[in-house]
Length: 469
Image (cartoon, rainbow, N blue to C red):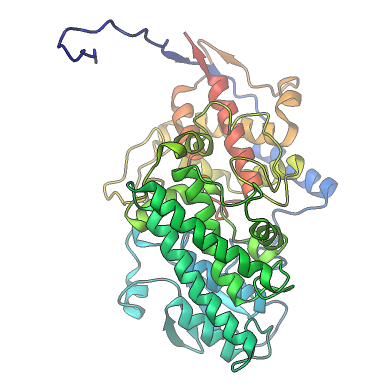
């Protein structure tokens, strides 16, 4: 649409960017069977197994029954959300893992991405998560659940000091501080006015949080080992770090302002119980608004939002910069291991290729007849299966690039070959890859380092198929 000046006369037309041309490509990628053999070989070479039983070993988001080697009857059933968005589910999930209480899992969607099953609503009329069944008794409210688990399983690792002790009094005070932190974080995050006041209030509260982390010598709130205080703070500190970077341009961690906070995150990120539940900034930036009713964007957040969304032309593209405790826009204390991270992404893609192809075909398909409030969720979307062969071939190219490396792939007989005509049409593939890239969820689908590899390799495919005319 042509613009007009304030005086009403037509303004000079701005130069128009060239329309991209979407190329065709060749179906010469390895078969899924060949890719499966490559995954197995790299599992052996790198000493990992991303196809292990998710119920065994370290916490895995796909686990449905965790016994920790016990043969005793499982007394606890946890109802948590499918996408790992719910912070209150996050707390209970971590507690069960830290205490190693055997439990089963049933996943129930949050309201912002669909209707809840009638069977669950019959048990829990308000539909709120998390919920546990302990010996068949239905219990709601995360704080109530967590206190009950401490009382009902005294022989498992205690996560709170004994009642009546000074240590317990301090722990209770810290739980109240967590509620203050939560209030001041949301007060600033969800407001788009009085930015300076919201920021100052949040910073004052963070000063108090950091001081308490240091009080007992750290790295955790009560000293050298994790407690229920850390587990209660963890989901909120994680989501605050993500959302304030994205919406306010504010770095809560990794920049040295609060060294105790940096040490706390580093300690948490050594724990399999936390790494198995930890999300990433991108996922939280988009899962929080439908839960909270919106977040207020400040101009200082806009460039960081573009980086976290991968729309700045640099992030989400190869070569990826290394991850570290101070990397920007997102710190990650364990760092990255590109061969292992690429393998994790490839293994997930190869093992679930039929479902992933069909999911990606929502991109060139139709929106669902029953839309939901979460923009990255569309459970009733209709995939366009007309392009199954094209999407299947394209994702085999992506999996091969992850396993072989883009440079080695492009020197092999399986190089992605593009042309202006002939071969498979790339138009629907670009839409499918774009849709899939934006919906790689952490930790639901894979860990953060693997997710960024998959997103970047999907962008490699999109960029390879898109040429300026």
